[in-house]
Amino acid sequence: MSDAANHVIVSGGFDDIRCPDVRFLQEASRLGPLHVLLWSDESLRGATGRTPKFPQAERLYFLQAIRYVDAVHLIEAPADTSALPTVPNPHPQTWVVREAANLRERQAFCDAHGISLRIVTEAELARFPNDSPAAVAPSARKKVLVTGCYDWFHTGHVRFFDEVSELGDLYVVVGHDANIRLLKGTGHPMFSEDQRRYMAGSIRYVTQALISTGHGWLDAEPEIQRIGPDIYAVNEDGDKPEKREYCQRHGIEYVVLKRLPKPGLPKRESTHLRGF
Image (cartoon, rainbow, N blue to C red):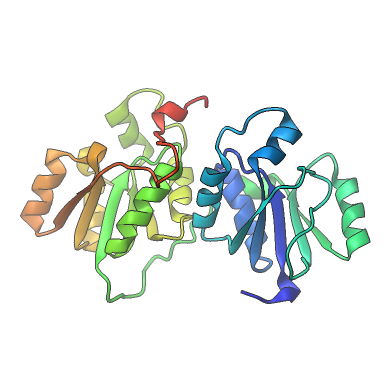
């Protein structure tokens, strides 16, 4: 992870992290150990004239949880999309950027500082590959399974995965689109099952993320039978009688966690983030 020859940098505010942002980080990480230069709240205010939607502590927590990121550095300098601020050693070898109008200025900066510029096109970010292995290597740890919609993915989900992963290897089963519409009604889900599965699988605490193939509150039953979890974990909102009864019948430990954000961060719910 310390190979200076492949030191890769991305820079930005990451104020509303969604699938294309994570895909961008994934593509950048293919070039080498990835360091994110994260603009502080003050930097973003100076660049945009507005208060960030998500405070820097929350943005930092989210980025640190993404499996493609090796390190995050909070940058207090004024935000500049055409140049990099002074960064810690090792000296970056590659600056990865998305398509933008100021590519000429970025290229000039890289030429002046001996840095390679790699451009990731929007077309490259439009697909959501499934990097989860079809078969996970056996582990001495218990298998823990969680299910849910995970629609507008946020730090509350990250915190839940973080806590649950302490119980064992974490398997996340994301509800398929038709079942989410059945349970939640028209207008749901906001994001496709492939996007939702991708976002869940991008978190470093997750062993494997899958899409459910059943129906109703136990739409993950086929996946439960295949994975054979020791523990089925839910938060208070996801606690359903059907799930409790199923676990009792099949000898699966049923764990209910309180829905609490990471200390110091605001509470988030997907429904409240619509149009945020």
